[in-house]
Amino acid sequence: KVSPDDVQSLSQCDIPHPRMLDADFIQFSYAPRSLHEDKTLLGCLSMFEDLNFISRWRIRRDSLARFVLMVKKGYRNPPYHNWMHAYTVAQFCYQLIKNLKLEESLDDIELFALFVSCLCHDIDHRGTNNSFQNASKSVLAALYSSEGSVLEDYQQVLDLMRDIVLATDLAHHFKILKQLREMAERGYDKSSLKDRKNLLCLLMTSCDLSDQTRPWDNTKKVAALIYKEFFSQGDMEKSKGLQPIDMMDRERAQIPALQIGFLDHVALPVYKLLGMMFEPAHEVADRVNDNKNHWEKISNLIKLKRGGSQVRMTFEE
Ligand SMILES: COc1ccc(Cl)c(-c2nnc3c(C)nc4ccc(C(=O)NCC(C)C)cc4n23)c1
Ligand SMILES: [Mg+2]
Ligand SMILES: [Zn+2]
Image (tube, rainbow, N blue to C red):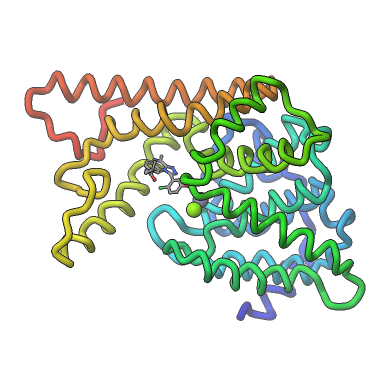
């Protein structure tokens, strides 16, 4: 369903090195949303190339072009869970692989499956997981041209992707949190299949929440997108005579307080665990903490203003 012209031009263009897209492309302080959406497919090719996936997995240029075009087309256009979310999640995955030297902790095929899962993990977002299963099979089929591809690798990648994408459900993350803590405290053991599975899940969640690891301006903009999505879901529930939870109710949500809670109880622990196993990840946990402190400043300002509405999206700096 992608245009042959788009496939052809994406197959024949020169692939730039990531630093040509932005001098800070590899830095955790870089905000991937600063790359214009028109250049994100080139960004994907650039990351595939720089991670050496194209040669390692003998991926034909036309198959790769078709694949990234199909994945991008597979996303709908809600305020947050759209293609730019998938692209930023994959970009953080690229930074983790490079900065944490993950090739020393995981196999090539596990890193490849993780990166591809980042791109695909919220395809057709509406909580319609089964449509993800079908969608991912068809886009992955594009990745492997029938002749010459090593079909057992294909099956292995699919099996890994299934577990990694299922791990993006926060309920799954909470379920394995105790094991993640135990692994981080004891130290990662790459000869343990359980540790490798759990590390892949932790890395996937780290990528999925990575907007919270970027400078404040990015965090603030992303919050506006997330609550726009939450509030329209709440409006829909109200139109059906249901009372949405506060987080989705534009009349009741206290965004700073909700964000402080999410960063405190969900995001920060994820990056702290990562920091316990990979020294360079300390920087990332610190930035999540800075963002939490920023929300606390705003929350205190709103409290100071008697009766200040908490739902305003134009926050004081
Ligand atoms: C990893 O899977 C997901 C799925 C969907 C979303 Cl929106 C997110 C996500 N990504 N960034 C955010 C931010 C900045 N704030 C959030 C505030 C609340 C919740 C939420 O789902 N709360 C209920 C739950 C804890 C029981 C999710 C939030 N979130 C992640
Ligand atoms: Mg998701
Ligand atoms: Zn996601």
